[in-house]
Length: 329
Ligand code: NDP
Ligand code: MG
Ligand code: MG
Image 1 (cartoon, protein in one colour):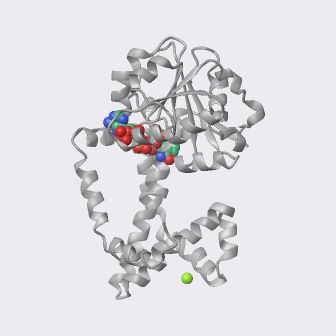
Image 2 (cartoon, rainbow, N blue to C red):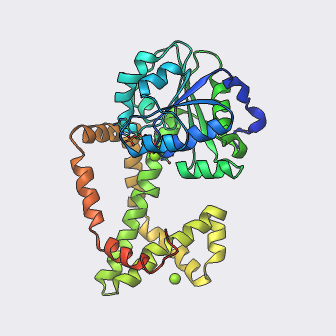
């Protein structure tokens, strides 16, 4: 098993006298900034004016300043902007305000791993990546627990990067649950692969293919929705709680027999070859290049594919059925 760091391994005191800039007050930003402040640390929020995030930061009791001002004030600078925005804000606002011995912090390795941000050699660069969305990072912290985090060191200019990273992770509650060490390369490549092959790309195509197969065979779309999408949550919740074994112990023997003999027919050798292709493009930087290019030209294929799925029959049927289940937010 890997090494796991807990509260006893991390010293918040390493951040004494250091101001932490949280740049961006979105999903991760609002959670990390508030958790750090509640841990007694000195936090300044860097957030542009004019949007909901700025208003939210004010409502939460911060006095947000520009990203440049926050970077200038702070010794520890955590960049919590969308990945494709980070390079521009870094070049324009953060880099001119970086001083030797500062620390640049990330919650995802994309920009460092694919050389979009190339920090000077005299700053620490590390990652503290909570393994959960921002609202959970905040809620669990308030409940006295924490979301597990990954820690990765990219540059240790001061000789204290690991201590600072562990202290930061403690500040957001991560060491309450456990912090696992990784590298920027491993975190970035596995994160991108997982969301493409399994969590997002794999699951959405699987759901659509199952739904379409039933509807094309003449079954009612409402019934197909329940069987191929709605019930997915029950299955995933069981896997989340106790792995494949708990899920299989909970479903009927009939469902389990079908599971055991049919799965490999759907996810077969050619699916595994496709996964290997995806991983290859993640590792050699092809995917990152395409995504950055897509952004430079205004996201044409992103927008087109998104619109196609928004208009998919499963979405119309789903909206109607969910309105009958008023316990769903
Ligand atoms: P969000 O999309 O929630 O970030 C929104 C923030 O970025 C807001 O403050 C927004 O301000 C600001 N912003 C957006 N566009 C611009 C722009 N062009 N210029 C300046 N500010 C801008 O990001 P996340 O919290 O989802 O992600 C932050 C980092 O954390 C990423 O590296 C991500 O990979 C990582 N991460 C995210 C997780 C998650 O659960 N979301 C989980 C683990 C890691 P405004 O409102 O004014 O637009
Ligand atoms: Mg991701
Ligand atoms: Mg059934």
